[in-house]
Structures are given as structure tokens and as C-alpha cells.
Image (cartoon, rainbow, N blue to C red; front, side, top):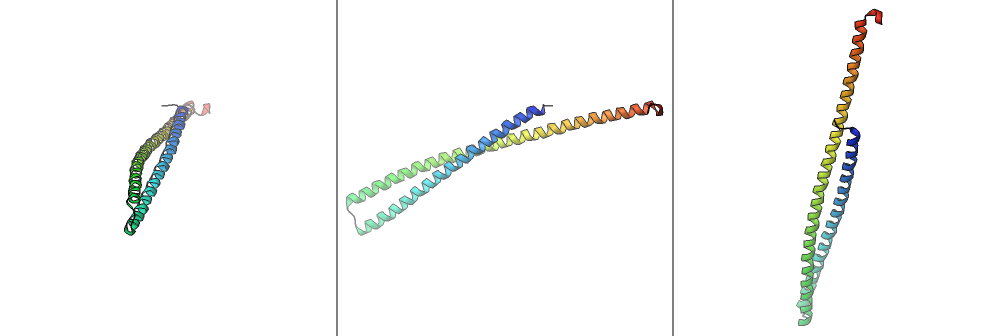
Length: 149
């Protein structure tokens, strides 16, 4: 059976690894959330700009101004595509950190369970030794009879 003090050291490491994984996961969640917000802002900005372009084109605008608006919208669409790609990477990183956290938590629980089993086993061994000692003491008293008491 493993020494409980060694298992306690393993437990400390397992808890630290789980804590570190939780911190990384939380950070990656925040990054993905910020990335999602930036994408939403860009899409809203594009919608507002398209609405403005539509209103201006109905009231009439010169060709150069129309070309400027379209160029700007094209650049905005490219930025939205890049931000969408970044969001996908951020979500993939978040999922990876979530899986790592799950694995670290499982390891910690396994170590905790092993420690509990080890301690229970040691307690059973101690109880058996005490019972054996008690039985031997009782047997010695009984075999010595009344004179030995």
C-alpha cells in the first residue's frame, strides 16, 4: 500500500494542476467572449453602414462617393471574415482548455479517491491489529486461569 504522505504530495500537485487548468479555461472563455463581441460590433457597424448607403443612394450620390462606400464596406466585410476566423480559433482554444480542465479534475478526483481508499485500508489494518492484540490478551488471561488474574 502506498504511503499516505506520498499520496498527499500527489494530491497537492493534482489540485494545483486543476486550479491552473481552471484559470486557463476562464481566460480562454473571456478571450472568446471578447472576440464574439468584436464580431457582433463589426456586423452591427456593417449593417448600419449598408443602411446609410442605401438611404444615400436613393437620394442620389456621385460615383466617387458610391465607390468609397463600397470600398469601405468591402474592407469591413474582410475584417468581419478575419474576426470570424479569430472567433473560431478562440472557441477551439476554449474547448481544448475545457477538455484539459475536465481531465485535470478527473485526475484530482481519482487521487482523492485513492487517498480515501488508502486511509480506509490503513484504518482496517490498524483495527485488525488491535483486535488481534485484544484476542491474544484475552486468550492469555483465559489460559492462565483465575490464579493468573
